[in-house]
Length: 214
Image 1 (tube, rainbow, N blue to C red):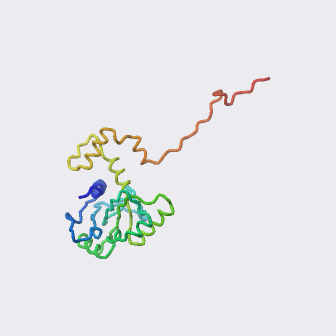
Image 2 (cartoon, rainbow, N blue to C red):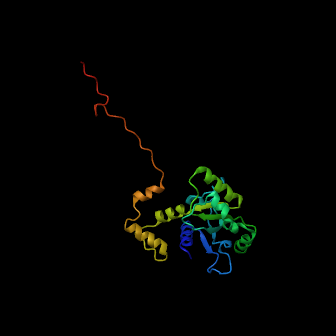
Image 3 (cartoon, rainbow, N blue to C red):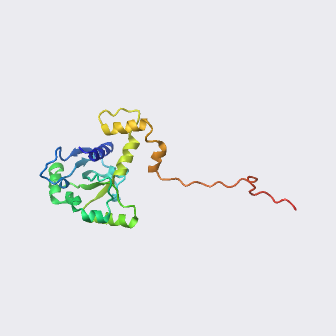
């Protein structure tokens, strides 16, 4: 299993999903992009009236019941409109052959969420909107950025626990134990609070002092 797939698997298991890897081998005669990486099942999905957002946050996963997951660990790439248009193999997992694989696993007549794990979407609002529109048009239901996965794993890993059954969590735990993930770094994942200005106190630095008669 690649490092990227390990990160994705640990993330979904952390969120309570049952995770099945589609294959344990790589065939030299098959195109790797045609394969689904994971089937995931949420044993206790949460109900919700609102539709899922296209870019999923960690909390949104509670409402996903069943999903097929494809991992694109191109960590130096941004999924810009130009990149998506020039790489049509990204979308092979939404073709009918993939759904036949899913039907054999989940059974017929079930609703599946098609999730793509991406390195990053464009920061520019217009380009980001174009990428999302193109992904939706091709049949992708949702994306999860790797930043979301990694931030979640770092936040949930405790330095005083021994994760012997997970090399990834054990590495994160060791790094946290040696202060490679400090509180100031974790603040990068949190929204910034607006600072409240305090009114000047009378008589301080000459503010609000009465004028002396001349």
